[in-house]
Length: 453
Image 1 (cartoon, rainbow, N blue to C red):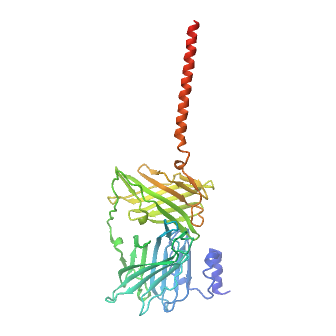
Image 2 (image 1 turned 60 degrees about the vertical axis):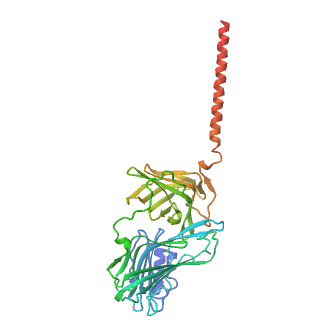
Image 3 (image 1 turned 45 degrees about the horizontal axis):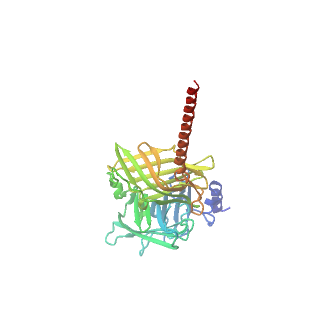
């Protein structure tokens, strides 16, 4: 048995056929011991494999962390023909794409699963072209970062631009998309970095262009590695240098809050769309005796999450919402409900307000169906924090073909609701009539008794 076959057999035993499939096309020794990976996630599986050789750039050694989470920490160590590191990058990211459906509605989908990514086309650069990270993942997604040296300086280089492409022909990811085809957005970055430093930005960075919002965090990159050794000197982004908290635009009080805009959110995993949510959201916060009421704008809100057999997570975030988590759970093996809400928001004075409740019981419906409530509902997380929902529809489990299943309506939406006050009124009227008749009969008997005497 060759070393390649031994490696494949070992990986098959430890990681299963899916992971071993990465190795099945190779029949020569693997230099995986050279891959400088570090485990980033608990209970994850660290896989190291070698992609096809790229001319002039040696071998791409790619390390992926495969775990049961929706966002992956990606790490790339690119080597040249002498096996010296020429480019190093480690980062996390996700993408939010808004598209129009055939029924003229807007849908939003978040891409955050990069478990099967490849890096074909990445290379160290040469005399004519600068280094490049080229990444392919999912069904027709591609992401490219280009680096260039400044012509006017020998001590700095640029993160030139970022290109992102997606394919709406994928009906699983983009159900009912009106326009079909491959769409590409280019975002000029022009970020200047010292040549001998590694760039670091742990803070969340957002790039917005057309219908695509890109989010990056925990970024470490050095495109021109000197002498094969990654620098330990960090060049920080502006957000990591800042120690003061930016003041978000949140009204202190809103005497008559307007109805929030209804947004559509979804979570996608390797099997397609696994969670759907449509709702208008209004947050009510009372902190230090100051009440704040503000609406969530779906056009500036990022949605991520994860789907598991017994739980599902929808996480919303924006410039002033660090996170707003809706955690769903299965009960009695046949129903789901909203079990938990976690929130952290930045108030007008810069204070971070956080609260969590893991013992809720809202939005109860059978598995295989969706929950719907068009009337205004209030989710009371605590005495100081409530969420008002409008035109709500949610399905955190058993989503088929990216569409909602039959909805179970809330009691407030039921067509029989108007009968309740009518029934109460009729019952009261009947009771009054019975009492009146009883009174008259009793009075008549009393008069008859007097006459007998």
